[in-house]
Image (cartoon, rainbow, N blue to C red; front, side, top):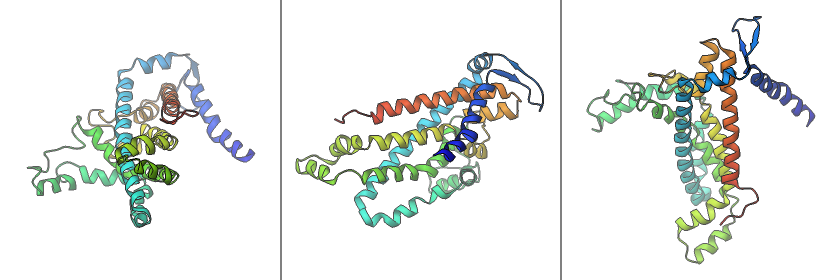
Length: 284
């Protein structure tokens, strides 16, 4: 384990420690310039910033929408694949194809699909009579729906990951337990909520933690589609931290924002383990 531990210490632990350390300083963006210790001033500036608060709220909304949609769709497809058994092999392979697509490519693809006036989605909706004009819905230009529009590519891209994880977990559920419930007269909704989901708690916890953290740090897929616009309606924490570091030239404040995000993600992960997985608990 020593080589792996050394690699993680050099390329993960040390940058993380330096990142948190920088959050207590006012740092000049110019190379070789000095730094000034400011204590918690960067954190006070972050929490007092309306931009930071708005970006945090949008990040929470985006994460909840993406993870909820992916979990519902992924669970439904995983249950369908389990019911089909070996007959689902080909469909499973096809369904996993989006996992091979880079987020940048997915963002460009859906930008062309949803772009105003001549997007393929609006054109198809107009031809079938749902819309009267291709520009009736501005998916990426309307601040009221832009955040949900940029979530669509993320859902399309990684629902297959949730499906894969849940499908693997379903294979480990003892068939005799479900069969015994059926013999006792339990209907499928009862079996799902009283047997399948409780036995899937560890798998669900892992899937939600991994996807929740990944969705909360969404960057490239949003940057390609809207670059945080319109009117900052799709500016999440990742984009705000990036802009604070590069565009506004304030590494110290960006480090403070990133540290807050890191602590928040750690708290969410611990809560998910305790509330969903519940190690040592018994399923009812």
